[in-house]
Length: 208
Image (cartoon, rainbow, N blue to C red; front, side):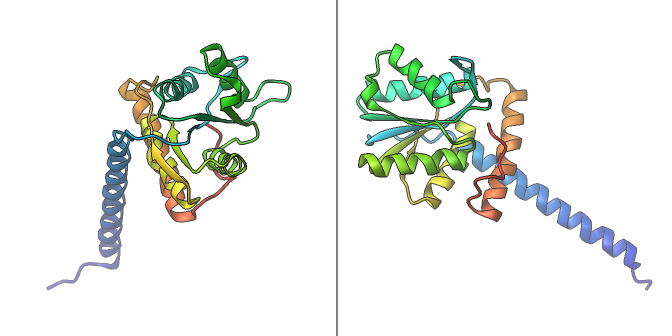
């Protein structure tokens, strides 16, 4: 009986490798999607709001919904402090965190209840800088506020930083259509794979 050629065997191996990678990628994407449905119901010392774009003096729709979620947590008494994160893309403009504080104060949050990180540009940096603020203010536990599809990676980073954190995904988001949700999920899956392989990296992630 004629044995398969080396070329055929290589093709078979490549097919198996690709099939395994695709299966693993889809399984991970499904895990990220499902994880976004988890919602903490308890209280914490503070809420950390993961940064997103600011449009001048206004939060972008994505950031606005994250801020609104944090305001709800504060007004329901589930947290006593708010930590807004995010720097600025261009010198001379307010940082994302400063824009968030302005929005929060306009909606009834006392300025003394707000802490700001105005330097970070990535998710990892958001949490690293927030941890510094937590330590200085004696904050021990936090709820992490971001979009549902972002939460799996956010919580993994928080665990790596030894934060006492629970997920608080936004109840509303601009990522509603299948197209926008698919693009976000695709990006988050790759970034989560990068986190699993590389661990905490403060410079590898493009700013959100």
